[in-house]
Image 1 (spheres, rainbow, N blue to C red):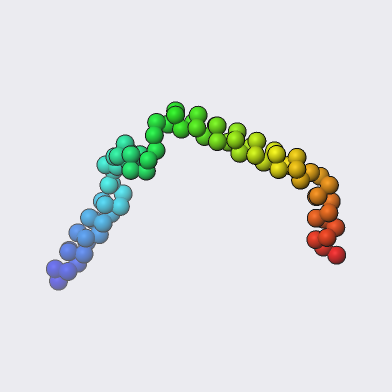
Image 2: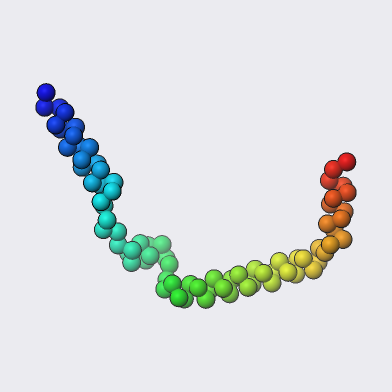
Length: 77
């Protein structure tokens, strides 16, 4: 008959672990993931976005609107 009490205690401990684990060390996690200072990353992300936009703008110039018309006519009949 003591099994119900033991099971209830296990459920209580499981809930505490699930909902109240709290103590996440965000600085340690940032170091493990290799993420630097957030203000530094914003500048890098902007530079990367600008570089990608320039690359795709070059593709858009190379493959202009005339290719779009060809794809539409040959795709469905």
